[in-house]
Image (cartoon, rainbow, N blue to C red; front, side, top):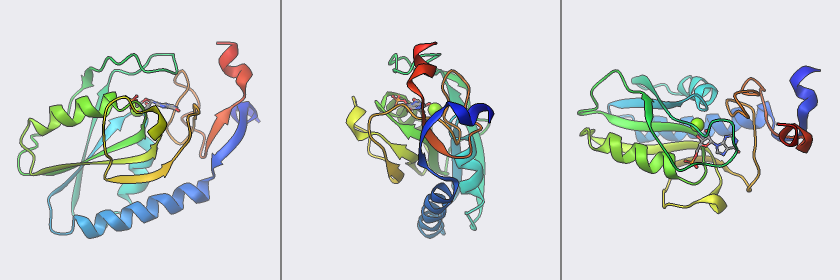
Length: 182
Ligand code: IMP
Ligand code: MG
């Protein structure tokens, strides 16, 4: 029914995603128990991952959001990155954990990590739900990775195609005709 009809193949079911999120949550609880954790969600793709992950965190934690310019409608990075919505707070003395949906070329994250590191946090690390290592153009090493994926454009669980499909509760690949008709 509806958007589910556009999906060709499911790569991660809701149950698999929940398991991944629980595993990462456990690691973060352990690694940050004596720290001053600030989870920074990169909008909009990490919205659902963030919401699920933060509920697996049982140590003191604050959250904030930022958004960077995206690819627009395309499926390939333009390489241009701009902060569209910035954080509300100072990063001084905080242990920043940047929460991303997917690490692709690495351009967005390289820029973001550099920008945030310049604000004097105590530490800064990267947590990404998905990693597409084959696509990397600049070196970025995520500290927490949910799963590696091959070089396919995927949607759901926050990830969009032309701002659609973020609401799919699982992650999948769209039927080719969806992209062809765009
Ligand atoms: P990067 O700068 O190329 O690493 O871009 C990362 C961003 O591109 C992610 O935060 C996503 O918003 C978007 N992106 C990359 N691959 C996909 C995909 O397969 N589906 C949906 N969005 C993607
Ligand atoms: Mg994104």
